[in-house]
Image (tube, rainbow, N blue to C red; front, side):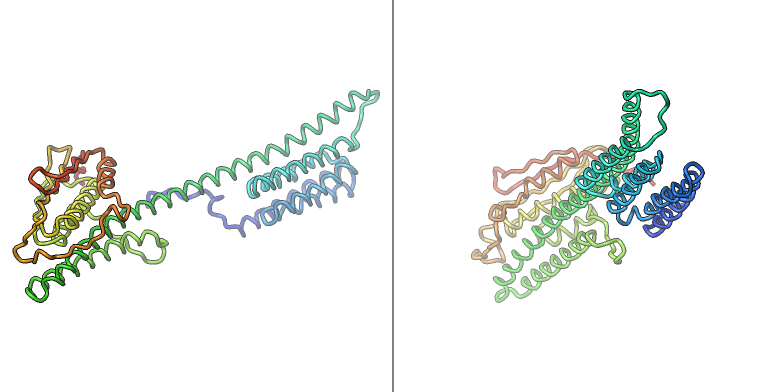
Length: 395
């Protein structure tokens, strides 16, 4: 097909109402066929009974258990009074539906009742006996009939049960996929909120401190606060959009990557220097990992080092790897433009149970890379990651 997707089979495209129509037509045709056969063999009463047993099968999808007991009662009566030998066909058809649609407990109970009733009816049903015949031959014949009927009813039930288990496994896998996606979204949201809210909190307090003495600095700081807030809202809308149904008009943007690093650095403050080596595009997963590692490192720098200078560099060590380094200097004790009493009351990651460094290491490990982080001898902090990658093929 032109869209590159295979269309489902006819069985996969029919709705429930259409399936009910198929069942009705099939039940009527089978009732007529078996009714005519039994009429020719045993008279009109046997034919009417056989037809009556098949007709309730039309409702097997609506009330599987009730239809089973109705068909089973008719089949037992037909077997006991007319000796109808094909009684297991309608019972097996309904047992398949019971196995495929009902819970395990009800399904097993229905199968047990069916086998017990059919075994008793088969053992007591009239059947032609060759003359002369011993009692042992009659018993063997009755036992053979019970075993055959039981197998012919159990096999459809097993097929239906296997289908139900397969469907349950597929639903479980789909729910697990949704859970994994939500965990991924929660992780992305954690990074977005941790970074942007930290920037907003720190810059807002800076603006409060310098508002009276340096209005221009306060204005620039508030502009950073607004930019960080808008960026956070944009990223959160994009990620939360995947939780909405596909048909409600949600438009999802691309995941952040290298092209978004300048805006990220600018939003963290004026003392952040960014250096990115040019080169071929990276795989999307690696670009997202680089962005989140830089984002988390800048969050830590803003939280713990305040307005200290910070350098972000991205270099390519050959065609198969990229290195990311984020280094911030020691916190400024006497900033040139800000008073030393600047209160940085940003909650620490330990108080909230966060896992900033652990999250960065996990992101690097997911790409097959490594990450190291630690304080510098001269003061400050350094985060270094090396991620293997392969340039995307030219399109």
